[in-house]
Amino acid sequence: MGNYFNMIYNDDCLTVLPKIDTSSIDLVLTDPPYFIGKEMKKNRAVNKLKFNDSGETINTQMSWDISWESKEEYLNFIKNVFIELVRVLKDDRHIILFVDKKDLSYIIKIGEDCRLKFRKVLFWRKTNPVPLADGIGPMTSMELAVWFTKGSVKKEHYNKNLGLITDVLNAPIPSAEGSKIRHPSQKPILFGLQWISYLTKPNDVVLDCFAGGGTFLLASKLLNRNYIGIESNKQYCENIQYRLNTPNSLVASKFNSFIHDTLKNKLDGIDKTEILTILGSNAERVVANDLF
Image 1 (cartoon, rainbow, N blue to C red):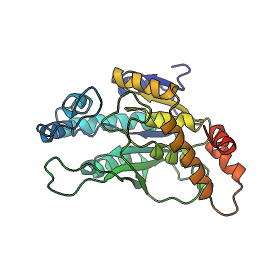
Image 2 (image 1 turned 90 degrees about the vertical axis):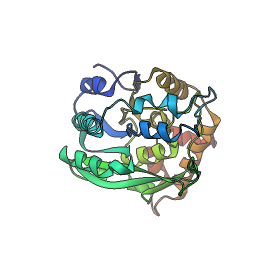
Image 3 (image 1 turned 30 degrees about the vertical axis):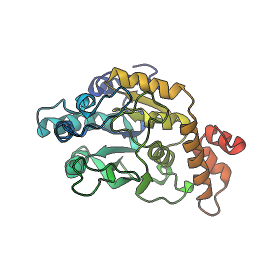
Image 4 (image 1 turned 90 degrees about the horizontal axis):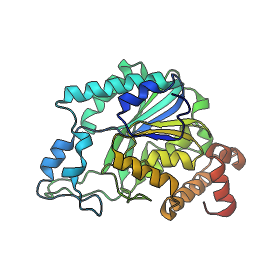
């Protein structure tokens, strides 16, 4: 496939993934479709949730999530994606992907059937959850991600020197964060910054095969990691390129805060220079100039 680092591919992931070299990826961090679009469209038939200034709603923006006729067909698609992800991933490296809570057990089994080691369920706790359309029942504040490792769990592929963290990350549902449009399932950049920092080194390669809003690619770029993005929607691809190439004060502020919080919470006895080496040269500039 040639030099495919730091590229965004506007195509189906199962078309692009087979072209990526075997054992060339250090981390897969991605947010695949949940196959819940039909249910959401039904539930939002009256109380429509808008996602951007154009007035588009869940009914017009979830086409990427309703491409399968049945749950069986959807899970078979996910299995085929896993097979390719395991092939392109280096030994002893990691996969983190978001899942719908109803499919958690299915996704763990698919990963284990592909000879991945299940590590842990990770949680994003939304500090600003959205009320239900009918107001009946508690707001959903948790999203789940599953962490797998290909092969052995090795200390050299987990940057514990950055400090102790929990499996719960608290962050608000993001605004556009430097985007022209907001993706319906956009994830907070803090999640990407945290896990890319802990599971990779500068110049490693991060793959997001369902790039969506491009948040994890942007986090990779900020942390001096190479990235490969795959996104089937042309509009979202254009938005990702815009985010990657346009400085944004909100993104810079969150990146700066992450760097300072990481340094503040470092383990006792660890030299700051060592931590900055893990976080990359952009982090060094933040510390030196207090801006990015």
